Length: 427
Image (tube, rainbow, N blue to C red):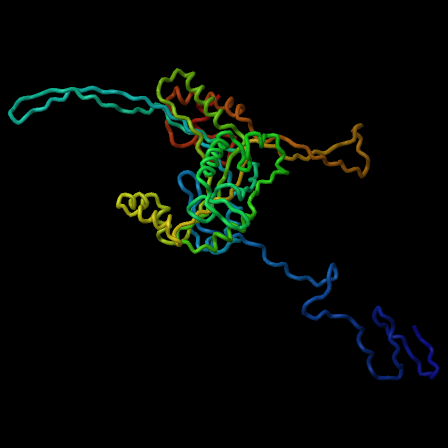
């Protein structure tokens, strides 16, 4: 657009940028300046929100890959030096391996004793012979098998810790209680009562935070459970362990299964074996598999004690008693931390979200169904499990089945075992 000029020097409109036109002398030979444009310079941005310059996101947290090995009963043992020096790494290691579910192994074994008699003839130096009768006893195994009993694969652990008033290993070789940050050795009567209650609690299938028989039921809502009863967090216990300079220290994370009355279930299994008219000696036990995580120092003596053959050799050579004395009484000897773990329910209430539609069933345009929370029981009851496996137990006894490989549910793909046997003998 042309703009009139009072000096009669024609001024022309030179198109500028979005901020407005530039007026330039028409008789001038100078070129107009280039349109203004903002070019951001590299450097830190002080803008926030959507106007901030793009910033590279920090690298994602990578879990430290610690060295460890598994024992024959599924326990995890690690001598990784980083786990003994960094409390955060130890804490993350425990959380990562807590997701691996423990299990029960139902062990059924039947034996009987056979007596064999034979005549033995002996000749003396004078040439005379004498005969005598010898009786030998031999234990014969009739059946010996395992059945894997696992919690539902969707179950997540509830992390728990012991209360300050409960006797536990808190960094020394004796059980202690804690008050206002100070520890003291637990009295023998208190320790015996606590161990007796722990045994009864395990047999009844109660969680580790239950303080009485009536303190829990399978209908208990786990959202309101206060399982962390210690005044210290698990991370603080991990830091305390890493700060210790003891040569044979040990941190134990215990996985506890709860929800089934194991004592009653053991009696029911014995009853089913008795109905087969078996007359021998019967052993029935629910053994825990993969129930503990051990963290131990990275030194030769600690690694030697983790090797069962080297430990057995040290006992034969009478070296182990001196190691035990050093671990028990020396200030730089041993220390145990058994203060926390994970609890895994065989059966419990879990939230389940469902969509609620209108009563008439009509869905209006743009209508979104509302979600409502409800509770459902996840997992089997103990009697349901027994009804499913009773036939397998009876046929295993009658068929004199013997194997160290556990029998597992063919529909459970989280464990390895002997599915061929189950397909043959199960109902």
